[in-house]
Image (cartoon, rainbow, N blue to C red; front, top):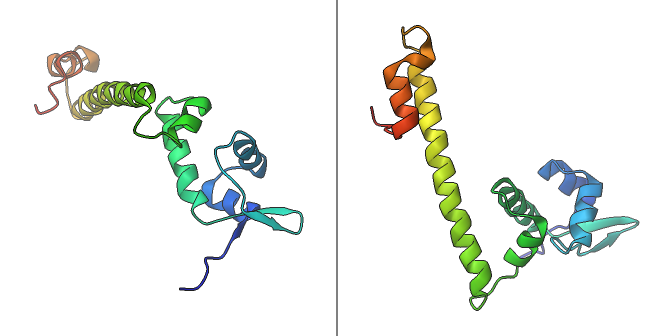
Length: 134
């Protein structure tokens, strides 16, 4: 199997939508690691793209960079961090349910003839009760 081509920092920035300075910041924080240099430019293995996607997802879920750094190296014996992960998963479940209720309510409101729309009993019920199946 041929060796995987290294990506320079500009390629990683383009593929991830990050700036080169953001990538260097992540590297200083220990979130990613360059694999070498091509002249003055840092190079990275292609796997860094997936790692950055994971970091971005974790940030969007509300993890701090310090928590993400721990998350990236967590082992089965880190009970505290694993509990924090489980807690965050529960919080995300609640947020997802809330957003689904809002989405379904807005879909209903977009076709509802009630005036004003936010006074529609079905709209209110979907927001309040979370009955997205109506």
